[in-house]
Length: 257
Image 1 (cartoon, rainbow, N blue to C red):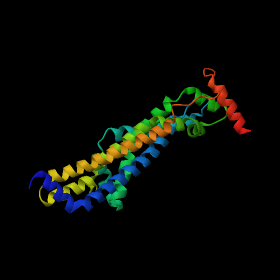
Image 2: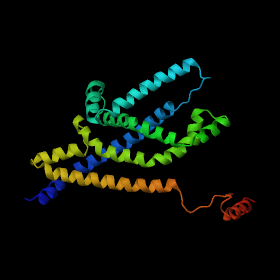
Image 3: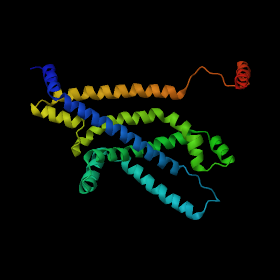
Image 4: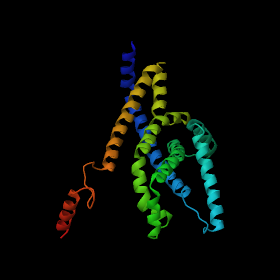
């Protein structure tokens, strides 16, 4: 049989396995990205807590210690491959705990993604104009209130492309977790290809599935980004540079009455 015939044969015999592997890959990537985002969000908020001369010395020391630990976590995770992290964490921690491999995989992806998300979110926070921080403090908001009510809504919109990119990366990088016997796409490809000692057709099927997943997810995320960006054709009410703005203000007042 030629290559195409082998691809068809392996798909017909193993399509349920491939679909199950696709489902597991999506679950790991999606949940891992969401959990990683939450981890990164918390770390970014902590790392951007401001200090001043009036800050208590104990609070300063505690904040420096926490920042040191968080920086170490980010540097270690970003400086080592996820495959190495998976092997070390799974066999030294999760196996003795008898934790389910799927849950273990999600935790590993979450902690790996969290390190990257922490820097992405921090970059989004830093990109917001300092005047908004000062304005929030002027009306009595603390750091957490400023983050959640003023800064983060804008920062998250700005970093949506990076968050989406992390999700796409996690779909592909989850393939390394077959090393801890997770039934994801690469694990299924090894099984299907090993049956007839024909790995190439199995990996071609896997490559096509990965491409469909990443292509679809990328298009969906672009639509979400456009929705968050809002319409380009609008007039700012009360704008001194646009004579039509006064008309919009009058109409708004009339509708309100």
